[in-house]
Image (tube, rainbow, N blue to C red; front, top):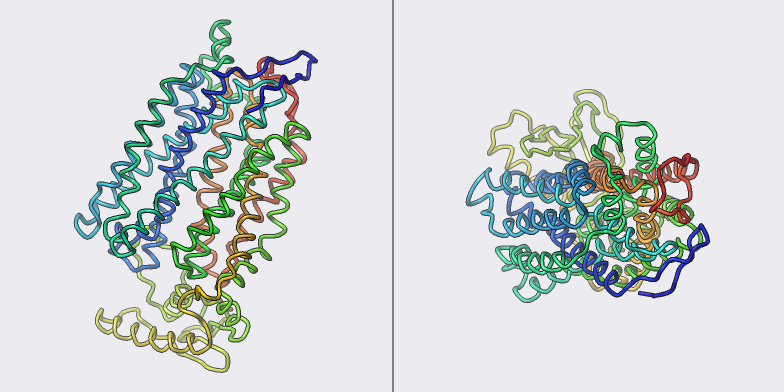
Length: 565
């Protein structure tokens, strides 16, 4: 890190970062990498989690259930932000760090010890979801503290650069989780890894926990917080002050819709949804998909630092909003090109052999089953369920009421069947027969069972994935500095944490599940992209109109009096 002396907006020279301050910023960032590693293990292993803990339901429902359990950790993040944000504003940033890392590390370690659904029944997924909730609470308190802590140590005029190191931690944590998974998977082999080896990355978190706790015990308290305590200007009720008064509450509202919501969907589309798209839609081998994502992250991660540095020069707004706009305008062509690069046989089949489902709309369910208890047995649901599982695009055509659904594949038609009310054995037999005939038909039409490794354009795929990561670095690199600068010191931890975690926990965290359901409902493998596109465009407009440029604010003296927009 540079030791250059920055000049503040007031014209006074800011002192350079001392070696001690650099050390604590590095320690804070490293601890946050480990915490994100813990959190992302689940997302990277979602397919195996589905098989281990939700094996009592059909594969489609199991995967949706696994995604919902993943999303549960995101759902509670705003509550963690409130809980630990208040604690951080009252007792300090350092001690809040220790609590969040302990909660995250222990709950992740316990996941590696959990019995599977096959051996323990329903109690296994119940405990898993409880642990996910604990992880979500801990992560809800982590980011605001890390960003605030680093920003309050940074010299005036260098906050974008210094906080950008915190911004790399989420991607580095994901990268670390992918490397550990790939290493264990390669060493044990696919069969052993799926059977029991998946537990090892979770169990290794106990080592990371020990390192992280030791590192965080070395930290000093934030100078801004210490000064506030010495002057007696701290808030006695930071939550009420941050969100109970319109002056501060409107800052949080505009920060959510004009900044973090768009940042969140671009981030999760570029990293998590891209991985789900490769493995679930394009049927790429999971190990190969993880390698491609890891390579793109390795190439793209330095851009977090670059855009953080650039935001100190030209401002936070143009970079964040520019990333949202570029992503919204290019997602459809980029994901279409990704299909061509990874599974050209699938792309060719979609063009050469279009598929149509002709069915009574009243018989078609929205096949979203988060509790895994529903059975979709109408003729429409049986037909669409098969096509969705095999990544076959299809168009919907309405048929008269009471009509048994049929699938048109080129110039051929295949009748589905009504499974509602059939005895279990008869339903199983007819389903097997229908699946067999449809599988033969789509294979004959060129729809592949999996991506052919010999036809993957690896260079093009990595280039597309890297561009998606660069969009992530644009929206995420400067955002910590922007959020810190929007709120005064006395309520900074609480004030910035809630909009960040609603944006990332809800708008971003539910993206894979929402997009998956949208694709299943429409039959279009790209339809789920409308979700991040609409949210990113909304953030672009709101941010442009209502979010001020904050790069020149002195956060030690800022009181929150300036007007928005």
